[in-house]
Each structure stands twice: as structure tokens, then as C-alpha cells.
Length: 73
Image (cartoon, rainbow, N blue to C red; front, side, top):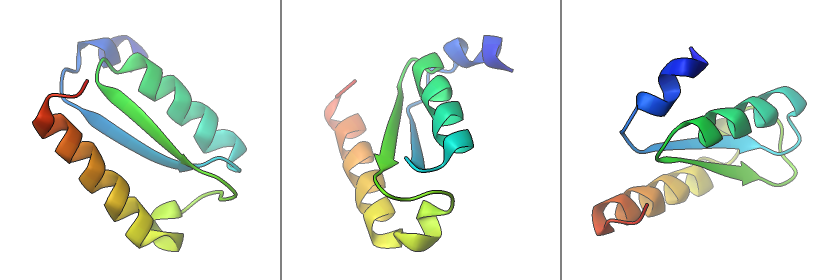
């Protein structure tokens, strides 16, 4: 699947806890492989940041999409 990622032109936001040894490393690789990918790491969290920090995830997503609308790359 990794060879396909550079061809994805859509913006992508990845959310992960920095304490997740598996997910955070995978997310870093995915974000680096996507032309318009961004990784938001949540300090002190492992898996399930969307369940543990829903408001913070929503804010990160809103900020991300506002940046996309403004033309930030």
C-alpha cells in the first residue's frame, strides 16, 4: 500500500498518541508518505485519542480543514 500513498493528493490529518509505540511510528511514516499529510501527536496518550480527547481532536480537525481552505500546504 505504501507505494500508492505519494499519489494521494487529498489532504489527510492523522491523529495519534505519542505513547503508542506502534501507531505513532506508523502514523509518522504515513504522514511523510502523503503529499498533503499532517500528523498531530497527542503528548502522553497511547491508543484511542479520539475517545480520550474528543474535543481536542475536533479542534485539530477544524484547524486542519481551515488551513486547507486557506490554501496552507
